[in-house]
Image (cartoon, rainbow, N blue to C red; front, side, top):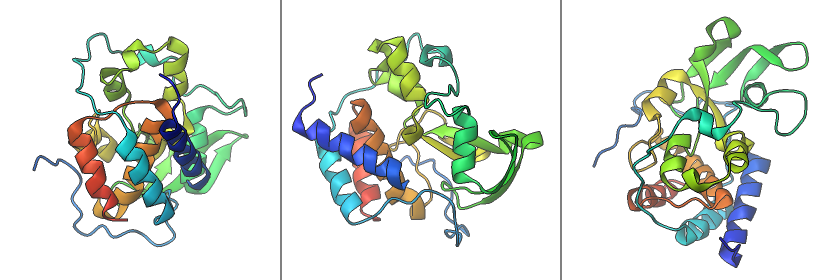
Amino acid sequence: MARTASAAAGLALAASLAAACSADVGISDAGTPAPSGSSAPSATTGGGEAEARAALAELRVAEEGDGAGYERGEFGVRWKDVDRNGCDQRNDILARYLENVRKRGDCVVVAGLLHDPYTGKEITFTKADAAEVQIDHVYPLALAWRMGASEWTERRREEFANDHTNLLAVWGVANGQKGDSGPGEWKPRKAYQCDYAIKYIGVAAEAFLPVTAADKRALDGFLDRC
């Protein structure tokens, strides 16, 4: 696909995110205010919202494919060290989003504290119970496959699966509930919907991935919370 001016705007949005960091089945908002001092990523509203709305308007709308042939292995090596800093992507993301991080050696995160962006829940992470904190693909891999990534090269899929801008440390329960759903089927708590929408739109624009009509409507609504 040719990189038009609108696509370039989407790439700029994704870069700024990386620098900053009906049938709803989302997490309940009851009793989960945003924790003070949260390490969860926070996009800059105002300008970020305006850029996201412009990029959202330019995203192609398409129907989901049937997902035939999808396997996690189609997206290459899991948590590959794509930035060549000596640490795999999982440990990089844990180190980025956890507070009070303790490591074994230079890379392996063995303990820390997560303020889960999706629910507001505070999670104490230990490597002995690593499943409590999982690394979520904001734009899910299986959904990306259904939306056109099945036609990508293996290298492009591997780069997408390990792209820091699409990775987020979250509570394992919330990650399981989200699964491979897009914004039209699942939503985070209200306090995070703006940041989630900006991040999702940035990833879609950067990867030239379309969105469904339902996902586009949901994202537009999430931006109203900015």
